[in-house]
Amino acid sequence: MNEINITVIDRQGDQHDLKVPTDMGLNLMETLKSYELPVEGICGGMAMCASCHCYILSDHDLPEQGHDEIAMLDETDEVESNSRLACQIQITNKLEGLKLELAPELVGEDEFSDW
Image 1 (cartoon, rainbow, N blue to C red):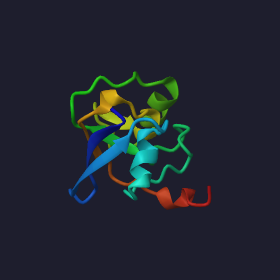
Image 2: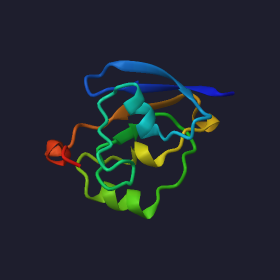
Image 3: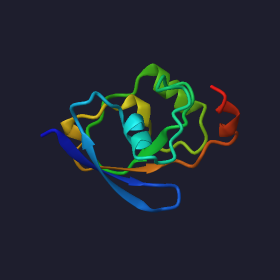
Image 4: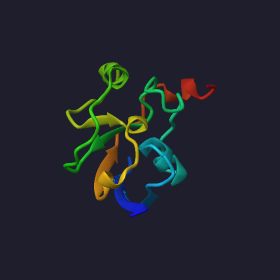
């Protein structure tokens, strides 16, 4: 299988059904950006800004959170038990059927726009 299906609920509550290639080495943040969903990815996927914060709604076995992701989420508003940084989740076949919701936009997110 070279393509999986992912469902994304945006910040307005609209559902987006994505077809995502698994053979390009993308992470979830890069995928969301490629579909022009409102995910900034300000730090370029280094787990340093939380602008790709999302809530995982489906029951998928995701990779464990690394120290950087945990530390960044500890400093982020609106964190829930299912919070993840999309930049830290690689696209693989195991994500077939993944469902997620974009977290609210970060307060002051525009201050990072010069990165």
